[in-house]
Image (cartoon, rainbow, N blue to C red; front, side, top):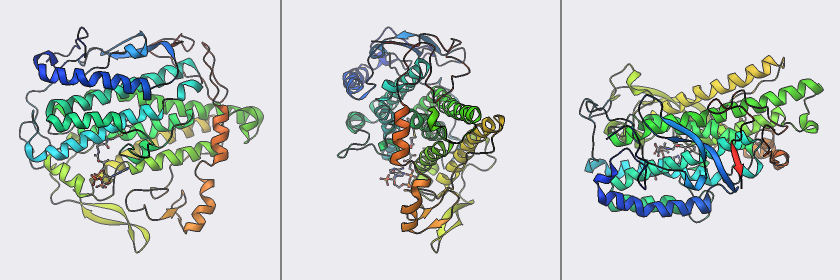
Length: 472
Ligand code: BYC
C-alpha cells in the first residue's frame, strides 16, 4: 500500500490492485458499466473539458491535481487513507481489539447493507443533478457542479471496491444494482427518500449540497469510526473530498442571500422578483424543504438497527474518539423526540437505541451554523429579516413525527390546516416556476446571473473569470 495513486493502470488506485488479479478483473468488468451509466445518467451538458481536481495522493502533503480534463476521461479511482497498523476498535463490544481487515461472518449482512445504502446515494445525486449544467449561473458554478458530480462518481467507486473486494458474489451483484436503481424511478427507485427528490434548479442544488451532502458528511463520519478498517479508511478519504461539496452549498446560499439583500436595499423593496432576485421567503421555503427531507435521512429517533451497528462496532458516533464516556453505552440513557399521547414531547430511552437522534443533533447544530452565517449577511446589509431552521417535527416522513403535521415553529396542525397552509412554508408551483424562470445559462467567462452574487474566491487560486469550462 502506497499513499500515491498509480495512474498508469486502467483503474487508478492506491490499494495494490495489480496484486489481486481476480479482483482487478472483476472491477475492470464493472468499469464499462459505470461508464455507460455515466454517459446515460450523468451530466447532460456537452463539454470539451472542465478544470477539475483529481486525487493523486492520500497523504498529508497535498493530495490533488488541478487541470482541464474532458469529463469522460476523468480518472475515477480507488483511494483509501493510509493504514494505521496499530488501529484498535474504538467502541462497542469489541472495543480495544485490533481493527478488522476482513469482514467477520456474523456482521456480513449488516455491513453490506450499510455500504450499499451509502453507495446508493452517490450515483443518485449525480442523476438528480444531471440537467443543471444547462442553466448554470456562471462557468465557476458549472465547474463546481461537475466537480461534485465526478467526486460522487468516485465515491460510488469507493463503495463498489469494498463490495467487490470483501463481499464476494453478493457484493458484485449489489455493485451492479447500484447502477440499475435510479433516482425517482417508479420501478426501482434509490433507497433513501431525499435521493428520489428532484434537483431541478440551482437554488435546490445549493440547498442540497448544504443540507443533504451534510448528512453525507455525518454518516461518513460515523462509518470512518468503523471497526472494518477498509471502510474506515475509505470514508476518511471521502470526507476530504466532501469538504468541497460543503463549501459549494454554504457559499452558494451565501451568494443568493447576498444578492437578494443587495436588490432589496438598492430598490428599497421586499419584492425582488421584478429585479430578478429570489425573495427571502422563497429561500426560506427551499431551506425548509431540504432541511426536513435531510432530517429524515437519519432514520428513526429510536432504532434497534443503530444500536446493533454500534454494539457490533460497524458504525460509531460523530467524533467517537472525543466522547468522554465508556464508548459502550450499555448503561446510558438519552432523551429523544417522541409523540406522547399525540403531542410533541421527549422520552428517555437507552442511549444505544437513541444513536440516530445523537447524530441528528450533531447535524442540526452544524446546520444552524449556516443559518447564522446567512443571517450575518442580512444583518450586515442592515436588514431586519432572518432565516431559521424549522422545527424538527416539520414536514417529516420518517420517525416519531411522520404521522403528524406542524408549522415551522412546531405548532401542531390538523391535516386540513396543513393542506391549507403548507404553501406558506414549502415551495409552491408558483415559487418553483419563478425560480426556474431565473435559471438561464450564463456560460460566458467572468459573467454571472442576476439572482446570485459572484464568489469571493475562485478555485485553486484562479480568478472568477478563469476559463473553468470549455463547452463543446
Ligand atoms: N428513506 O431503524 P431505522 C450521502 C429505512 S448521504 C427511506 O429508523 P436506521 C450523500 C431504513 O433503511 C449519507 N428509508 O433506521 C449526500 C430501515 O430499513 P430496513 C448516506 C429509510 O437503519 C449527498 C427502516 O427504514 N449514508 O452520503 O437506524 C450526495 C428503519 O429505519 C429512511 C448513510 O445513510 C429514509 N430516509 O438508519 C451524495 C449511511 N430512513 O433496513 C451522497 C448508511 C430509514 O429495516 N445508512 N429508512 O429495511 C445508515 O446508516 C442507515 O441505513 C440509515 C437509517 C441512517 C439510513
